[in-house]
Image (cartoon, rainbow, N blue to C red; front, side, top):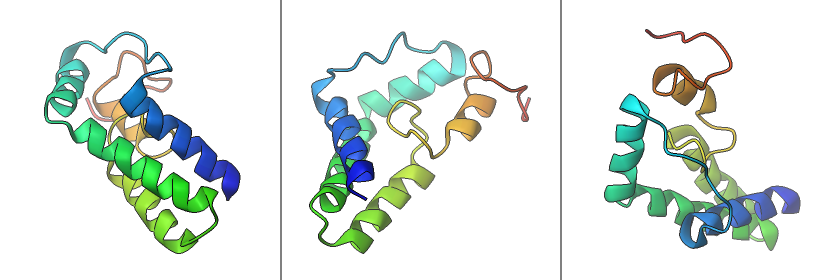
Length: 107
């Protein structure tokens, strides 16, 4: 569990400190959506939840609470750079169809 906690702490802190480059902003509908997430500061809420949940796993205390927090981030969060597992498939196949690895399901 500590490795998972470390991953979420690092990527959550990246949401605030931006020490890992996210690359260019997507274009079209996906770019507008990402822009809305940045302007509304939803991005920072998700990053904060990742840091809190990851820290709980990292210190090995309140692990069930940390997993609940991270589970909600993974399932609810449509932000691709912040969510390494959650909705990558859904995001790529609905918003960012140009950069997806598979054919879009929803056209």
